[in-house]
Image (cartoon, rainbow, N blue to C red; front, top):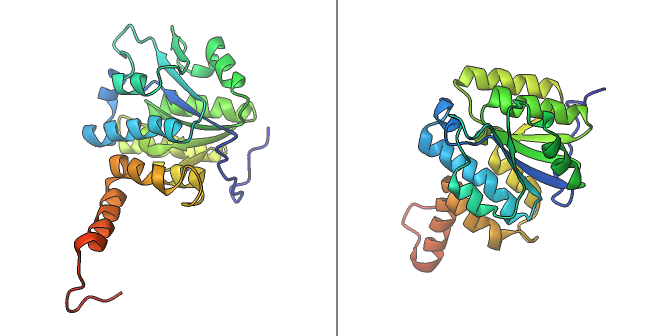
Length: 222
């Protein structure tokens, strides 16, 4: 099938989107080398939290979790206690699992926000399968981890060539929100960013502190 034009700007519609958490297992976490461990832990929890703040249908899946790949982090399970958790028994590509395919189709949504470990296998294989099935795919590159930066870059290039949109968490969150006055908007998103995107969280804390107790110093200007 033909792939979307690289110049097409398709917005993420929170009313037509689902969130997939793919193989973010505690064993596979050890394979990730393109992010520092603390940074990557934050990234995958932020990805999972997008489903909560925007009330997106969320599907969790694991690959042979009884082996060295291990289970999902408890934080993600606790975040989505009612979400389908598809425990695959051998399929590397999640789309090869009938239960997973059924769960995705049952959402009735046509846009997919996803990330997984590893970028070159779990994210890429599934993303390309979803493109073939006619879904629009937005891959959160910060929440997908690979064994090296080079592997991640090449996997992202492969997905882009097939029409997958490769975005940061901040870009996905802002496209879902669209307007600070909407709901979810500033009251929901500023605490989210304070927790998961500290550079913006501290910016807003600084603004709050300036209003509450700050003063203009000699030499300051807009």
